[in-house]
Image (cartoon, rainbow, N blue to C red; front, side, top):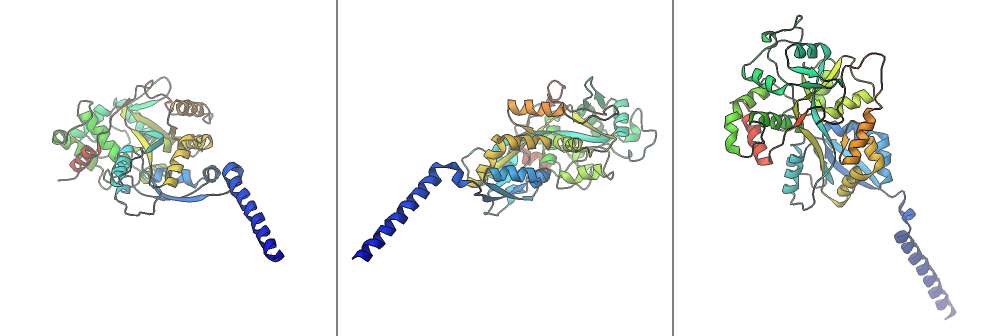
Length: 373
């Protein structure tokens, strides 16, 4: 009998300890320190380096997250059939909304940061553009690219040699003048370029009806097909340019150019221009699981992660993000030579207009119109 009582007493003691431990894990936040969950998802190539950064990994781990990523074109993500993904992170809102609809999600996708589309070129090319009124620089050294004049040249199949003041030494500046973009069927930046051009061709109004597409389809098709073969990843044509093997005018994200400048890795003769009407690339994350949504929340509200986002050239959402971004621009490394270009903390003040992106249905019709017939 005494033995039975002893066993029961021991069980009660152990039970009490277990109860205390369970209660501590609920009430004491320190009890969960070091506990992490692995989150797997797809991201646009332009965000690959961000997630690979050890500082980002440590900041995410502090939020209990270990993130595994694979790259894919933004519009390709909506076709993925992998049901084990926790999140997808395209470079614009439209594919994010398509993914949300496909998975019948009720939660709103999160936009932790964004980046406007820009053009990168070498200084010698920009000099030719300026002489022909295709580019201008303001008193703050911000360059803009004249989209209306450019599209008139597209309609006329204008070559570099046909400019009023053609290049004295053609070099790479030969043949038709066009912007190098990614494939709009698979990549967000390519699709956003189509949205930007369609906005301008539609009297600076967003195309709201697929019936209006044939009216602008010819110029839209020329603006895309002059490029020939297009890459599926925004990082590819940009890095081709950086390595000296790219085409004269390359469409990119401002974040890519700013990241290079911050790391002091930009080509010495690189110039970045804002299209005078551009499009914002809303990097939008869709949480496909609770853990995926935790990642979205962390990217949107964690101070350390937002600081790192700026260091990779992204503009965090919200007024506080805009102030922090402007503060980072004031800290840009200054060389002994006069800077060739500047970033615009306020696009409106730099007289850079913003185009509105059509709905996914209209975007599909516009992209279809760019294909060769």
